Length: 89
Figure 1: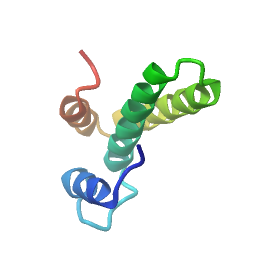
Figure 2 (figure 1 turned 180 degrees about the vertical axis):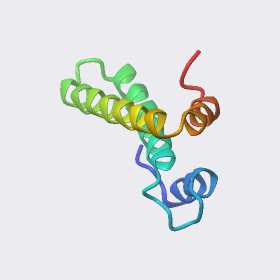
Figure 3 (figure 1 turned 180 degrees about the horizontal axis):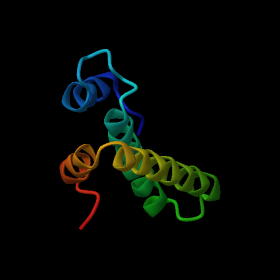
Figure 4 (figure 1 turned 90 degrees about the vertical axis):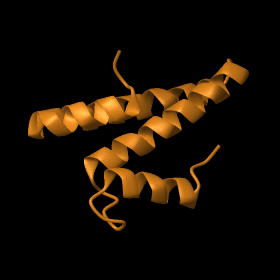
């Protein structure tokens, strides 16, 4: 399932400083997380879909890089994003 305009607007409002701040790292991580969860559900239904699996692995790598960037810039922002998205246990 693709990301709808309404969902993106909610994520931008929640994680961005303003409605137009779509490039903020926290916003991008939240959008990657949603896409990852959608692809995970797709792959559970279609386990032989290797092309989608590759896309999932690429998204996970992008999210990991973005989270490392946020962690290096500001550890408090990193912890806030991790807590809000429930990424770590």
